[in-house]
Image (cartoon, rainbow, N blue to C red):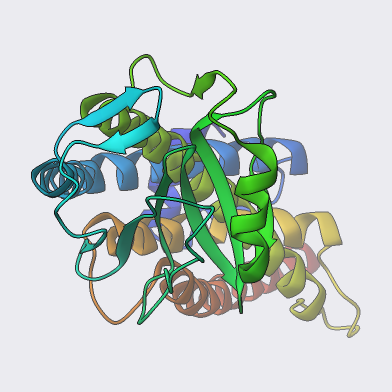
Length: 297
């Protein structure tokens, strides 16, 4: 059975699952990948316009507060030096901090409140940061004055400023991840990064979650014949579990796509999959019992 027929039939009802028993595990996995691609594209397309508007607002406020980004012998600096050095954006979820000098200043409380990510800007480095634990941050350099390429690195709070001091200096040339160091180029870079990270994150997250729960339920659930022995092999249970995930994945995709409240993709998928799989196994038990009865006549 091809992918689209399997998708349509599993969404229409449970009668198709007796036919899907003959599908190979490899074909079921390939169909799962196709479903994850469709789900991830759907979520990305539906959420992109909102993300695009948010980024436009964020970078508009950054430009209004800091002015243009100036690159000269004194490093990477804001045009407006008399404005706020700390700016809270995106409904208080994202913070930008400008530190005029890493020689004199210590790291401000960049993660105050509920903030878990932001930009850290110094004359020798512009990087994004993501909080990964208590007093622990992932630093992703975008533009920096250094004698070597700097990869993303995880640092404790107390080590952030020493790391910048050790690895950057105005004596070195400026490395930049994008074509020009200005707000427009940085905004475009963030948009393209969001597209890649969002799509791949949803894709692999969906595949991993489905395989995890399908594998788990394949061990737990089974059907039994009159002898009390299992009538389905593990491969068949696995295949049925994969195809039983199709409607739950589609339903769960609407929650992140339209930013629906209260429930996440993961919770909706688990609830729908658990219920639907029990219904499917019950229907299979009835169909297999009928086949056994017909053979005994």
